[in-house]
Length: 343
Image (cartoon, rainbow, N blue to C red; front, top):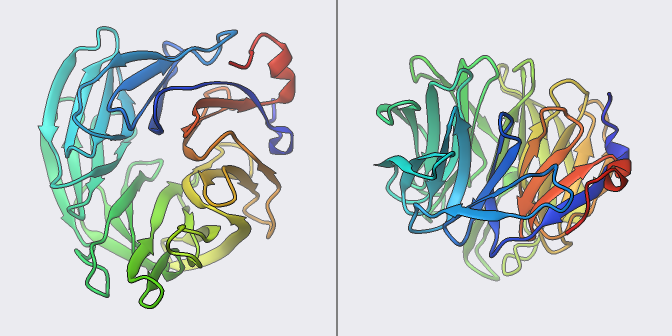
């Protein structure tokens, strides 16, 4: 069945304390995991008539920023600098590693689930054995400071579908592309519109690339975040996505919508010709859909609160989201009358 993004509707949701920054789906058990500002991992069954989130465990000492599932273990990354492996059946902490000097911002798992990559505020990209927790390499290539000498950040990491290349994106709009087997830096993309430095009204260095995603064929890289910020106090600026032919180093399409928001996550549909990004800002939360061959969005939806992460369900008929209002489940509007209620 084809998913029609122009007909997408909020079909269910459930709140949790604080904000959820991280999201992972377990297709084997039909469970969705989320985590964020209260340091804990929550679990919900998105197919339940009235979904209710259950607090499962707390193994970190600060915000949780990313989740990835490998087999029977949920891997979490946090502001506390650690990566933790937890058995989903028992909630037992399997292992914990001191991963980065500073916030671990993002995680990505290689196809096959044997390797893992993380990025942190030490501006390093680190490779891990996902089964043992042993470090498998460190990649250096991002600047430790902005051009004006201010603190920067490394927000996001993505892996090509064939597992051969890694992309990492930072605050100043730089994307580094690495060969996964050798760690060689093969391409550097510069997308400076994602970065804002205001030396007048407020001396602030803000913005950044917040999400990266490769297309299914691996040839196109989507870069998401916020355009030039017009009000640095309120972090106000237009939501922005760029598509790049990363192998040639050329930008092939730019979308910048008038909706004032930062796009925190972008995802390509694996079969249909569209991608979706979610975020929020001065204009409220947003889900925005684009066709890579068209200049204008094909649809915009207004979620409850700001969106931090998105997951496309395995049946590709629903979008799972999390953020300021907990978990949200989006899909065809008729599903709301077929046993999936709102909470």
